[in-house]
Length: 285
Image (cartoon, helix red, strand yellow):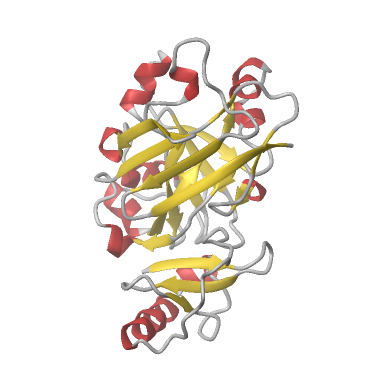
């Protein structure tokens, strides 16, 4: 299933994109797409059944904003340097264990919402990423297979980053990762059964129409199931939590000088196979 949320910011309603590409209203069945829904197999079953019969009312998507596909996210766990090609382009040694940092849930915006370049920024960068959405409480998992079994679905994430804040201003990476609007998410949450193998997805990103990133999740150093297993030994993952699993090569930071960092007026588009496409205009904060 492709689950999403549509409407003005803060007033989104739950919806489904059916196999024919028709937008369907879920508000008569469920209150929202959130951790409570993703943990409720009976409710998800009712949605599947209603989608199969065609009884869900159609929505006119003309001019309708698409919001983040998951509401009330508890935490966003991010994995750094998780692609072999990205580690090579930045001159970093592949990590022996997953590198973990956090993004605040309030950085999440819709897939076509405006992204703000922070005041004083000169090194705002792009990163297309596979987002993993947790569907079952995960703690001390023992295997990568268990990790995958705790995944509700997947989405496109844009891990926007300010490299000077992240690397040159002291402390942890969080300064360059938590600026407002720095985590567009969506358009859809695609359930795990529809995605299949998460290590067989292509990721692409364009800036002003020029292809910058063209990678595959097969390049991940730590695959999705292992990431979920590993993280569950350091914190409890709850339904609705999100893990951003890293970015492939092609970021501005890895390019020759002068590095083409983002400025107000730039347009970034990104997609992951089967998970949809995003488009953001960048403006000054």
